[in-house]
Image (cartoon, rainbow, N blue to C red; front, side):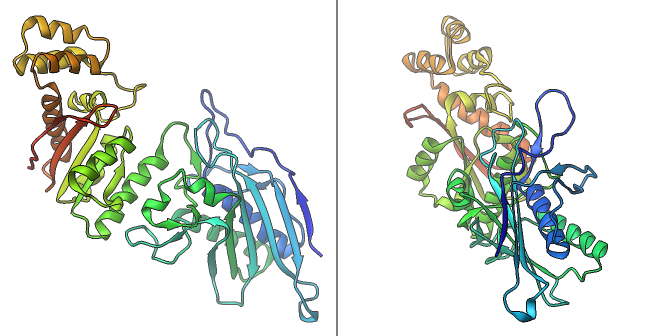
Length: 386
């Protein structure tokens, strides 16, 4: 018979700080669950809360949300455990993380001496199906740092209890396949569920590190697939525009969002032949003005800058003054369009030049497409390179 205890824990440990509350990565949660499960497998008791050491030395404690200890079957297994399962609820702190509240489970089984630590993807954890990611095709989508964290903690528990430390670890996430539809995983070729992520174990609120990491993995996957032309897009409408313009396949589309700088800096280090940047006119006017983070909370449309561009494009002083006083970037564009001034093209060309300056001579040809909210192209630049 299995011994099962549910809902013993709350939302996990907290870091002492002021301001926004940080949280824990799925990798940290998986490590805590694995540590508790392996301890129970060796001793019959689950440590609750269970304390782990993160890569930078922090030692948070995690309450268990579920635990299960199942004896081995058959006379030969009497007195030994067949497997142990422990689960932790992911607490992302104040970050708007889609995995916040997910139940991360680790099921640990003993293996013959010399087997090492073997990782399996359980329900809700994805499998790698395309090259270009930091793990081989066919492997569970449990990233290298979380794997090392789990290996390290298995070794510590094994040493403490005189065990060889040869185990199979199956990580699963309740409803992970459903949650993964809101992530980049399907596009990256990670099928069946979520990735187990984290380099520090800590989620910094609004750092958007997972999104930026997905951009980088998107570039890696595109390069591994032999794509020579990729596109950084601010949203689904701009993706449709790029597909219509250039016929790019899905694995060449980078969901850039507001992180133009993340795309450009990574492509600078990992070049492709051509990069198209496509997005809304207002957002790309920020790039044209030198902003690499296009979020409205961190950069604003600079209407005096647009007025100066319009002036260089032939706008009268009266029109330039109207542009500088416009309520929105779109209103500025409409004023110029009515007067025959191609402000959209001017913004696109300037955004392209800013992108090239960030690329610092990397062998990448860049073009920029500006669209309105309906997806109509309102500006474009000629391709240019170093």
